[in-house]
Image (cartoon, rainbow, N blue to C red):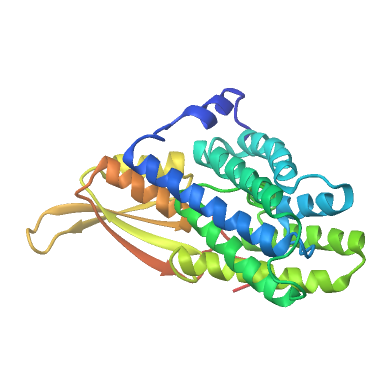
Length: 305
């Protein structure tokens, strides 16, 4: 179901706590992540025409063919994607994503202005593909920890998932692969696609290792007296399912309600922050989940592992 135009304003201004303690921490994470990510692009990826998919991949193609600034083009392409995402999915990302995509684009162009288009390591395409992936992955992980995103493929994949129900990971690979194929056609060099695969893979591995392990999904068991408020947040804000378990504590023999939910890493970070706000005395156990099937995740007829 599409959301109303008024949700655009909610997307921009709701839950605006940028100057709270956690808000300042998120701003610092986004700034650090943006600088690291921009370094990966400027020093290693852009000079060698390595196209790691997504919006910035298209921006790199435009940079080398038309001389347009990579960061600015990435930002320009992200603006309609953000608007489309809010219209289709609701106000999910907030001010952190606006900050993330703006600052990342700004740092890419600023560093390019100062450094130029020369690679940090001359005549080392393989090393550049690897180190570019490491820096882009580390930067993305910092931004994800701030519960933000840099837009682009993430948004397109989520909209495509809503309509097709294909697994999110497969959709992201498909979208990035299409951009890489375009780069091969434009630059007429199949080797660039092979190096791009190295960068994309390295980026994913680094993101996973920094943000809490190799598993993409997390399970959370939450014990709290304010379980109704926490449950409402999971259902209405994160748009995930949750289950209540009736339980009894052994030590005090008191009745308790336990919430169980399955989430992505980014959603888990948002949930932890909200629980800290609602009930600092809550008890939360987080587990790695190898696979999740059902509404909001992979369908049961998907044979992939």
